[in-house]
Length: 241
Image (tube, rainbow, N blue to C red; front, top):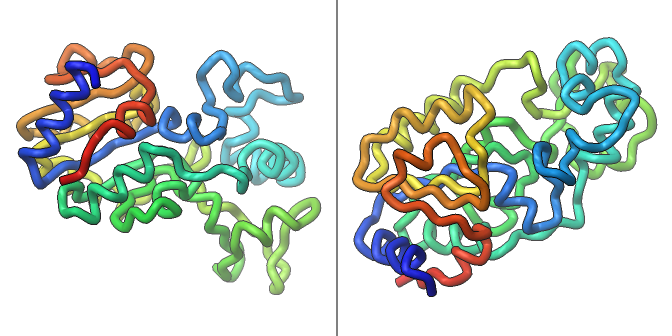
């Protein structure tokens, strides 16, 4: 165990109000591609850039094209929770961790057993009819062809926050409440480049800010503890007591 991980262990041992704020790097170790790394979606070739395809305007105007990309690249049902997801769920069960705030839409935290999860950007496991609001699950969208439609005839939309769309107010309020009351805030697997999500960090007033990320982030200079190792490797060494 490195000196940094030992310090993290001590923080976890001595605090009972910990909040975790995570991004794509938490899921890449489960085999889900991120957007901004060298092998991420932004560096792959499509007829349109991913950020254009994943926009509200594109969904409304070229819905079938949107769903081609969405099924191909966003619906990954083979991924399993990794050491980070599992340890966070364990910490919550032990009463140490009060909330997980995630920018990911893959449901892996819940699969690992986490109960209090704020999904800032929604989830691919929830889908709703734009006309009547009826719920449809992951399997329905995965198995559908072309533009998935509701029994009422309406177009079904994933409950994910697309570009040009705002975050859910209730979710933001819950995340702000958790961060502002936290004694320790652990930021993991995120470049903190996506706003407004990254701006939620500003509400932290606790004892220790921990940043775990392989590459540099904008908050490194403010971190009380900085760990530049893969997040799964870090959490696999943590003991929950």
